[in-house]
Image 1 (cartoon, helix red, strand yellow):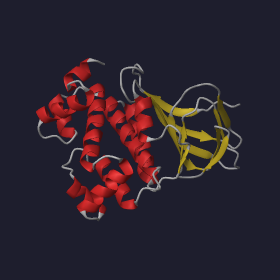
Image 2 (cartoon, rainbow, N blue to C red):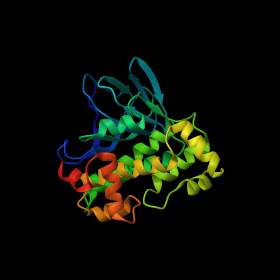
Image 3 (cartoon, one colour):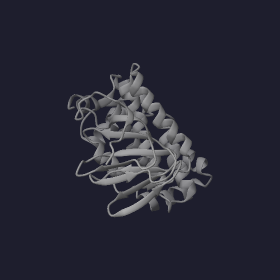
Image 4 (cartoon, one colour):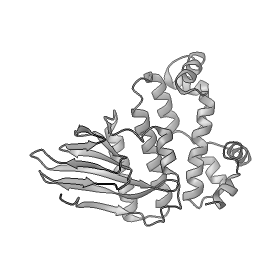
Length: 268
């Protein structure tokens, strides 16, 4: 096997500090015939083919990953190769962190290997931005890369719900992009292009939760990441999570997590 000569940039933080962190991000150029194999090495990585194609073997299944498609490495043993006659260019990002496994499971990406995204350029932009952050290390790069990584996982999670009606997926995507904005069932139904009553019924049918509770859960999850990856005040984090009243944010946070935001931050 030939080693993967990747041009990657590593975030030098202890893996157990942050709930979700980027271990490495970058790009790889592979010549025809290049092959890489992992055996019993746990990993969670998101990779996107920019040029050429990848032949992936994992869980006794074979996948052909083409340009603008994503493959996820989430098994300890797998092989991927460039069996074509052209150069392969791919972007990659490797995750780590204290709670990233539970985050990945909650989004539904723990058992997915191949995704054909509908908005590949947005995913590519996120991968490039995270790579740039880890390479240049501007002020706040740890927080920003973690948040971008989380949003990228949400975006990919939204892509693996083909059975969900388009207008629900549109609403979920709108939530993921606007957690700091005013969100309620009326606004989401309007964004989805259906009546509020119909939207509420359909949302509960597919997600077993009300739209408003889903928004709260996503805001608190985002708040947890900010609390453990940034030095921002709780008031600033509350605003980023869509709460104009930091006290109400703290109340909602404690109701869900059993700890106040300050206690949660200190517990890390």
